[in-house]
Image (cartoon, rainbow, N blue to C red):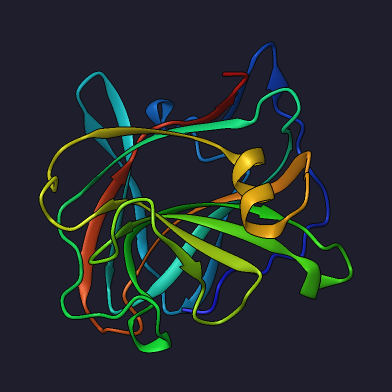
Length: 210
């Protein structure tokens, strides 16, 4: 699907000490999150899991994402932290092409270009179907969005995995700029290009000092 290009009207400062909570999903808290649809609507709902709730996301050939406008200071909290679990990946899709640009799960950060929307930049941290872990490539629709395979394939389906990335370093690596803040965070599962189905779960998302 076409990558999210948000019109960001305001930002919510979330810094509290050395931790910035963005997705408080374990508390069933979806305040500040909005849906952006590209083709139909993926389904997002809270379910019980262990000691709290998780965000369950599923698609059956649809594509929409949930995003939240934020103001994250990457000088103070450059590390994004999240957990996720998928039930399946997609079959026979070339994720570097428009026809195969679907992912069972993705978490991404957005740096707004303001009124110059063409300057908006994004990193998609994805659970890839086939691309090797740690590989990266331009989004099939725009050079301003980079895809980074954090996990790949079906081997770890059904398992909860915890991730951690230094967003400031990733932005500098991919775009050659020392960017010190981000303006939005998003989670997504999409199957509009392949017409396939997938289900994933997301735990809390937060930024930390280290």
